[in-house]
Amino acid sequence: MQVIALAAIMDEANDPCMPATIVPMGGPIDPRVKKTQVNELAESQSLSWFEKSFLTFVPEGHVGAGRRVYPGFVQLTAFINMNPDAHYRAHIQYLEDQILNNKAGIEKHTTFYDEYLAVLDMDDVYYLQTVEKIFQTYELPRKIMKYRGGTINPSAIRRCALLTIEGEKDDISAPGQTFAAHALCNNTPSDMRGHYLQQGVGHYGVFSGSKWRAYVAPKIEEFIRRFDPASRTRGKYGLPCSTAIN
Image 1 (spheres, rainbow, N blue to C red):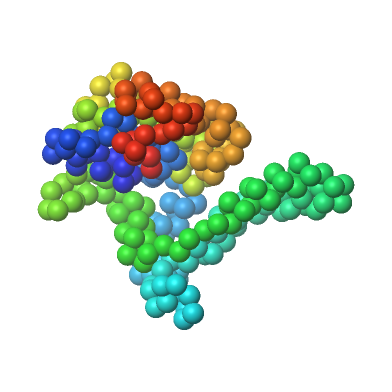
Image 2 (cartoon, helix red, strand yellow):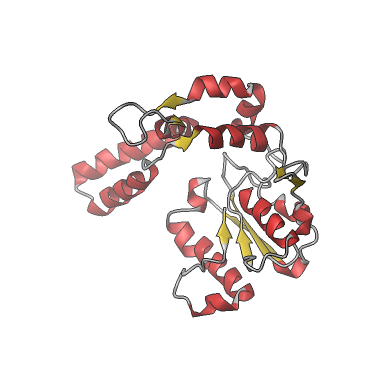
């Protein structure tokens, strides 16, 4: 969502640093399109409930002690609880691979979970704004989001090519939520827009793993090279700094 808002602000201001392309991926541009458990929870509780239930302070002895945050371990627990059976099967398979000394299977498991479990705490203000503005009041798709006193209008995006990417099995940002960006960016020429639905992946698979490397990343690179001449000198998956990815 943020990348759409940023592009709209920059294009309307004729900012010379306007990126050539933007690529929202698996993001809740309009969560009303196809609601998931995440959306239903956000709608069922007040913002104060989220504040009381999920925010805490970084304890003494740790970097950032005293800061109020949404702890990464809480987010991780929520993710795992959405698909407990899959994680259970993965760990059973891991034990079997250990018994059989299946080094390839062991490496695949550890590589995945080393990354999956590497979570960060989130600033309390950012977390509460995300819950409220994205999942409760839907400010961007309703075109009521404000920035420095002005209303953010995605229709202002005219010079920036748009590629949306979704995962077929995404149960956090369901297919359609990111694609909704095209209706909002209605003044972006149709030949400067594209959409890609990756089959067989959930939310995490949109950004990581074998299908990301084999299919998603090449789609992004192809799209960027098409609209940003400066990127054509980059190496494989060398995404240029001028491109914003959500």
